Image 1 (tube, rainbow, N blue to C red):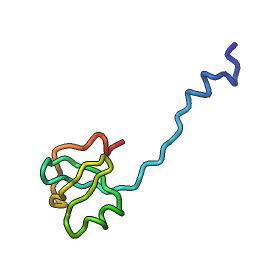
Image 2 (cartoon, rainbow, N blue to C red):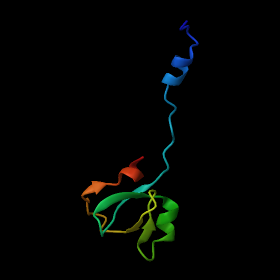
Image 3 (cartoon, rainbow, N blue to C red):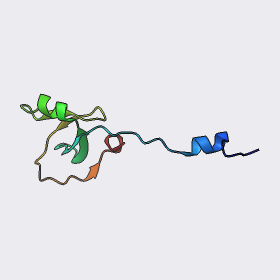
Amino acid sequence: MAGKHSKRRAHAQAIPVQRRAAIDLVDSRTQIMHRVTGDELLAGRRSGDYQALCGMRVLSASLTDPGRGRCAECAR
């Protein structure tokens, strides 16, 4: 009995998840691009050392460095 209010239909819709606002930074050691929050950018601006969304510590590379890939964990 699959009516218009079936359980199957209710689970088929995806619920949009709001992503955290973040900036992309390339790690100078690994050349991988990570995402860093604005608050973290302010906290680490003197040392150039930031905590990415994935938890990794990132040492900022040149802002013009395109990097060699993206962190899959930060991209979620």
